[in-house]
Length: 391
Picture 1 (tube, rainbow, N blue to C red):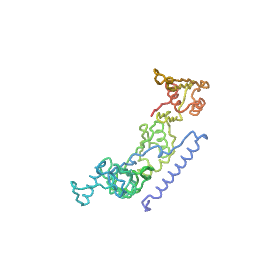
Picture 2: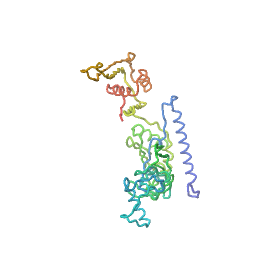
Picture 3: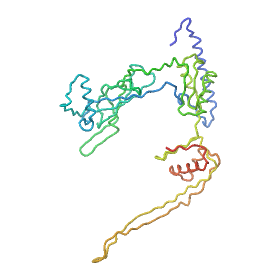
Picture 4: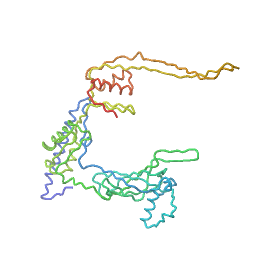
């Protein structure tokens, strides 16, 4: 909030923000007017294609116990002895002495679980976060269970949150003598706002003199376009691309207010560039072709030769009342060769587009599996100006 005093400079600062808003609106209008009617230029906001340095999430993990299960917990005696040890340790911390030598602890309503969560950026002490609870032993369901207080650690081994609460699962398991019905995953659930942040991740955004923007898809052209968009909006010398995935920002040109700078520039529109690439998933047969893929003039013929071998063994028996003949199995093999005469040679003209390539291959009746082989052969022939990534 602004505080209006005689020396606060409230009116000039407010006017500067108004001018920034006007320039941002002008940049948006100008960018929209440059769009071609066919929508070939795909504008994206900077916040959708990049990350700001320091503004990041952190992963948390913890080990705990779930109690209150209806006989669906771990088998603490045979299959999950660590659950029994954890239960004894918890009882002793609460002041309950357990004679481990003579203790006959075989509860069916306790399960060992792993607790995971994502600590959002700038989370403060006392903030509540969602946590996920997953069974670690042989428990069949966590329905109706309650997670006991579980410390959650970061990658540095420090405790950043504590989780506890009633578990909500998205599935169930019903079992009878002759049939079992399982829907969803009953051994995993969530606790909404079940974690309380106990430690903050130190990051002083207001004290930074420069900020780096990390592109999600590094590219020289995209990083330069991001820097040019920021310089056009704020002023020359504010941003420059240091490498394909990083844009450096100088906060001195913006009055040293990082929050205001990030708020304004994250809405700037940029046309991200992309590398010509074909991605092939051999396991599922999925083929993704990028927009900039180009094919030189090439002829394609897709054969459809099918060889079918059928084995139909027959049983040969001797004549009735024969004393010398024996029953034997006689092999019978039938081989059929089929070739589709309608398959013809197709010619793809020079520098065809993605739409023309797909249309030409579809005219040949090419399926996904055949398409993978054809694209790899085109690349081997040197007629494809793109990279092929096989997953």
